[in-house]
Length: 148
Image (cartoon, rainbow, N blue to C red; front, side, top):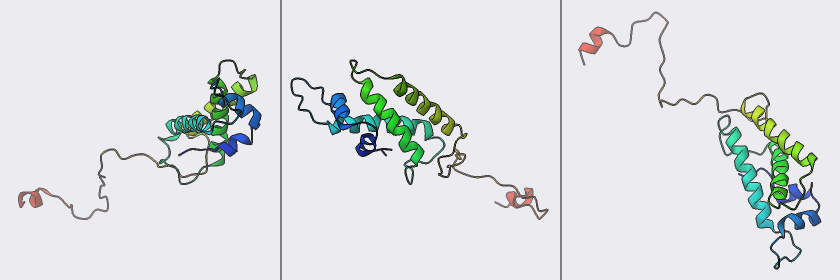
């Protein structure tokens, strides 16, 4: 599941800048946004998000929480700029990236809610053991076991 879209990225980065960070196939550059590069960066960011939240939430999520969309946008923008060494990653981008990772850690640790129910502890054994404490007769007794 991708947590943001190209349109979400466009809401934060002007098209001219997206051309700069995606249309780098000189001499075949044509001045267009290479959507496949943006989608790949979104997929990588979404995979990272899943790695953090996967132990706390059943994936895929039933809906995309706004906070995860915001995190994905920040991670994707950083990843798009990082892929080109000649593009300057600003201090603001680094700060947003670091804040996004810190927030993912807090979500994974259960300190921050994303508005979706957690899956709870996983029962690794596949069965459940319960006990009877109401004082009634034992379900299994020495006598009942001998008759088997």
